Image 1 (cartoon, rainbow, N blue to C red):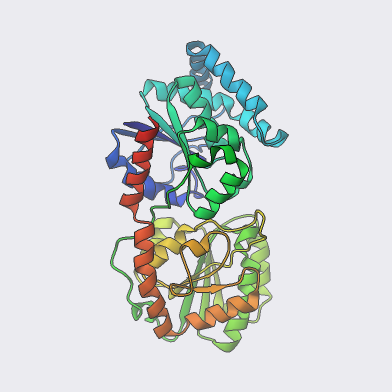
Image 2: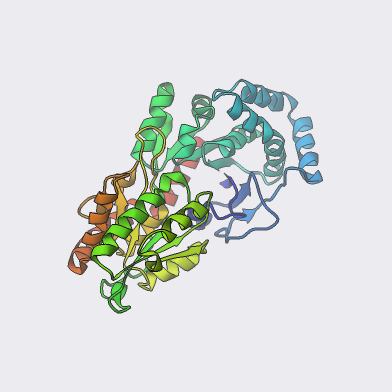
Length: 399
């Protein structure tokens, strides 16, 4: 089978680090694997796991030429796809976004036809899935999509896409439940295939994680966006540090709230125990985790019970599979990976609860006990080869 994956920006940006791992395990299972970002930059920044990258820029002459060829080759299907996009559910803003990517989707349809692609899979149920929806109609092939978190709540032609697709993969039961609520007539199209990002390398020993003297280092690797709850994390860390001066916090990532979070940290009495590293390559973070640089990983994700909530963060899967303790909030689908036997959990948005979780994680024996449970759970649920095989089986059933 020849498969194409439509991403948002991967491999040309840093916001889809899990995708490289999934492509690497998919590649040996198919005859040809292509990854095509909808919004590519000048050059790839990441390894594609053996997949061939197709970069078509919005204003490039090649994109216009390929779109014209697709229209000439399949005029009725192209116009039918355009009509479906114009009538699609989701509101005027969603329609505008879908219309904006229509020429690129036509161009990709032609390029993938030239590559004799059998099936196209979109990462994200938003505009990448719109592109896959268009490509499948123009080329007369099957398609599918992965849905994560925010893209589920965008409600971008959810029912129409579910009716057209072979399947819609969610990474959590919570995601599937929400999609079934949005499109009850297509409930059987939504299937759970968890992220295959568990690491199969040797677990980090509890002793090595605190080898650097008396200091206990926490890592928060998360984009600086409201859902990640950095403000709550800083307040919780400050309260914990007042009781245990050995604590250190490192924050990695970038995003719109980075400046505000830095300002918040400077106002705290423990500001000298907080380090901002900016964006760090995913591979570099994994090397540091494997080396025992950090004693625990922490996320303070918020949950408003409506739309602002966590999915299943790759960093928690990766850390758990290495036996590195996780401190997290019960936000969104986090509880599908972690529980009180495998991690130190706190209530979303409650700094005091998170403080207690941080202080509990500083206990070495308790860290070791929970980490031992977490390794097995993460590697079973998120085994890369098993999850890739699940996807390829679904691709085949669709075709």
